[in-house]
Image (cartoon, rainbow, N blue to C red; front, top):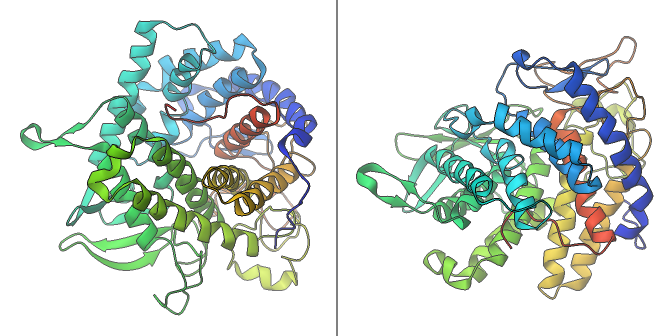
Length: 459
């Protein structure tokens, strides 16, 4: 169980955040100098050097977007130019990518990041450039929303790259593309030009994810533990009926893959912030803003509590809460995680994602008058961040291209590099783990310095 530090605050993490961004700049430039774009997108490291996987190019936006975050945090315009150039050169295919559910990862991290900087006045406003980013975001949100499985009576979900039968936990964070496109005034033109609301699809997808991918201890099956998450839900596309839980990257459908858990915590918390910022009238067709917001907060809170209960004291989780080797580690939740244990790997990328979710959930609850609950979640996120931004997770080796060590990609497929004599993957980084560590650090930096709160949407 996480040992939440009751005295921790964002300002107290200033030194490790500065250290992280000092290392981050050299990691970005090292990768840029050595990476061959013809290989596709960098995904994870092998012996400290980034390599590709060739499954989907879902990490390219994290590579380009990391430079944009680096500029935001440091003001070094070299990284702004890297981000701009990379967005123009690399990201157009992702705007029109019809075969993936990753638009919020690729396009909000790039076009969205640059659009946000211009909105915030961090870079000079240029109407043509602003319209270029906005057009990409509008198209991306519509393409993402078009991957739709209809469950009837207004229900449905954005299906994963596995096909129309598949609802992934991951996609909750990719809803950012629909959110921005909606705020920019866009709709999805359907058959005979029927105007499909992107906000309606965002809310419906979130409701389906909350209903089918998250457990609440209500007797759904004998593994119905409150806050447990199924990576994938499977449906019969002939009649829209739910069939079973599944998992692509976790140990089993009845255990919790911790990165999927982290996507749920952050995705629901961040989209709850978005819903909270909307005019009340926007949510009237969907039961009113109060009801919609409650539907986002419930899964966010129950999964946050599950993470706290089922994670070692330092806040860094093992890759799956039901991984069989954990039984040989004794009381592994009663002490800090051991990334070198030889039985089961930890996943630092899940920690980077979840920590931001904790902070955002806590900050929103504080604005809603739940100060004690909000403070607890913010401090949980800060406790995780402090562990992540220090040894043995922060990569200080100049020859290692990764920023955050001990990330895991696909344990069941055996894709993660295991160094000789170690028994399990360790010491490697991932593009999404590094990106989310930077994003978390930027959020905390702004909070600690009293700067405007970092949001992806138009506040």
